[in-house]
Image (cartoon, rainbow, N blue to C red):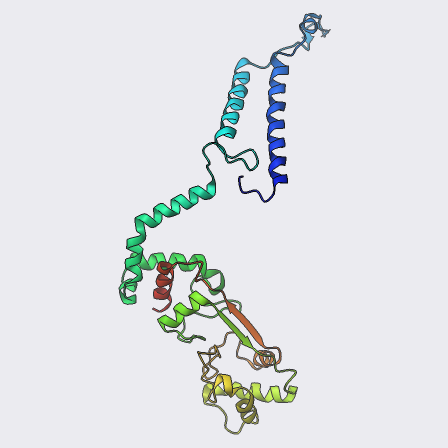
Length: 292
């Protein structure tokens, strides 16, 4: 409540709160103490011999319940934030409480977490409790894109279970991907190459997983336009994030139509950076999980 974006909204909440308290107080007063005694002495009309409207006030316990609630509300508004940007006498806030809890957590577990950061990956992978923690971190941070089992999904997010990593699958490379993120960009060739040339290149790419067809008309075109990034044999380049084309593992699909579409329109992909979102302990556990 104390972190409202402007004074207008803080003042508006103050007005609403005070008007509500005053209106409730007036309601209680009018019911129990504001009745005209002369009006109560008047004879009430009677219908069907014994049916009368009457003037029966609410029970007294209802008055004390509302009165106690109003007193509690006033004490709360004095001690805690409730009147706009007023922080209250206790200067309490949810953000401060979270910060205090986080500080207590750090003070309690900082040494144990630091020890895990210094552990060898094999030690972490052999510790069932740590790997369970790593799995929970993965499910919270990574599963939405890469799937609960890390097998990728939607022909958009890479499979983390296979041995092929676009940017490298060594622990240090995985850590770099996690901390800094990755941005891949396969350019569109439709404005550079003709449709016939693109068809020839796509056809040749489909032969690379078998070593490449030396007599294919797309071979020289591939070497002229694609080999700089993907290599002459289609082995890829982890430094550039250029995919390996000599295996049969494809992110967007390995059929002729899909490869042709990739060449025509290009592909872009971004792996977000987690260096500021996750701490060293969490990143170390994720690396141990993904590098198994």
